[in-house]
Image (tube, rainbow, N blue to C red; front, side, top):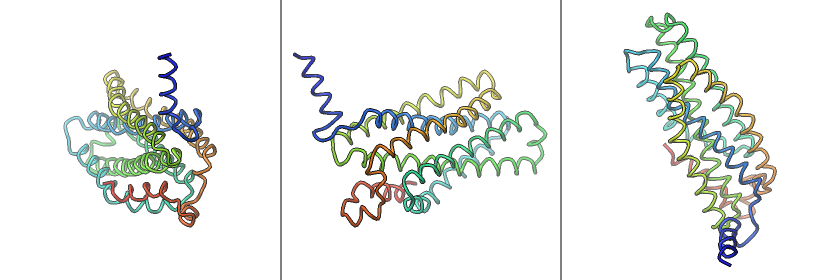
Length: 257
């Protein structure tokens, strides 16, 4: 009797009083978000480990790298968000994925070459050129990761919940758990590999980010096709007076620094 009551209560929390969220939609959304957050957190921490291994006696490169990455997000994210918000939702996610993964892959190639060829970064000119290139790639990756996270958490999730508070609470809670897990475990994982071999860590991160992008895109594309509300344009929702699910993404871009 108690077991049946527990199952009924759990069903109410997950499915809510209205139409339930399809199981396949949920796990694909969670998997896509996990891959995105994991790659972002792993690269964010791993890049500083790699820079420390390349310039062992100088903290300035890592400081410049971090400053450029943060400044790009603060200065360009609101503007970029307003531009991406005019696109089809799947198109904007596709663009954010590419702007995440391509810079990470190119950065890993750069890190590996600098580790293999010390003379390429010992001279001042080589140091300036290599650090500038890596910093630009980091800025692009940061913008891509931020737009992806904001779009999924503050737009897609709201629409998938379809105005059901129980659904929205469940989805938001799970997304937060994923974020926290990746924030804690991602840096730990790359640091453990780096302690064994920095080159192995660089190659492993580059390979993982290149392979996982396909799985991430397939998952999020199937979520898009499974939820009709995601295929409704924002302009049409405005005329229908039901744009409450789309607006959080717009205001979120403007508020994030």
